[in-house]
Length: 243
Image (cartoon, one colour):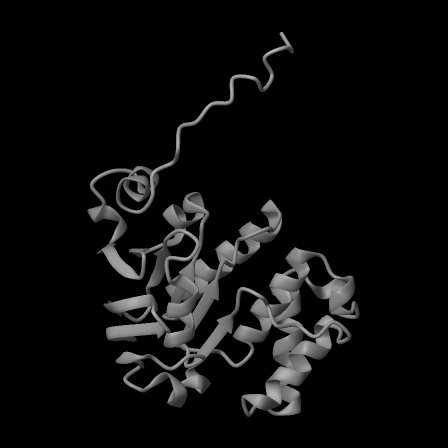
């Protein structure tokens, strides 16, 4: 469902994504993991057609990303909300863009607001919403047209446990019904529960790609071994006078 071959993106002398290749089968939840600056968000933009590759190619259901926009939903890292539109207005604006009728848009919007726990927030402006409400609003927009492939850039960052579980349970259900999900995340405990494919990227290169049961050790330990180690540093003066 998602395919990349030699996908590369450079910015002047800097290479953000360095010739990566991968395949993501339909119905998978692929977790694309790496440190800040590793090339995760650039890869998502390349796969969704928001950026053109310097070289190489990507395909979504066999189509170039620019021709597959009707097949994909995207939750971007910056969410892309309009501060002076309400939660509900965001969905009503999105529906016609994807060719939904007014009736379809309003019906699906109501169902998504209920499923994501946003029913009581439907009349709030985006500027009045918590970060969790804003994230769920952006996710509802990404799902409104029933995409075949869903791209999520840090969907669990900065949200409360209830919102996290709501999103996690919904994603598991969608994948179970055949939707393909490609997500970046720094929250390895959630990745372990959800992912059916694990991909590590470091300095623009893919350094691991497998199913979870093929990991030679726990996800966290393997991440630290291949991607970045956690520095063991102590500051002896901190808390030294509190005993």
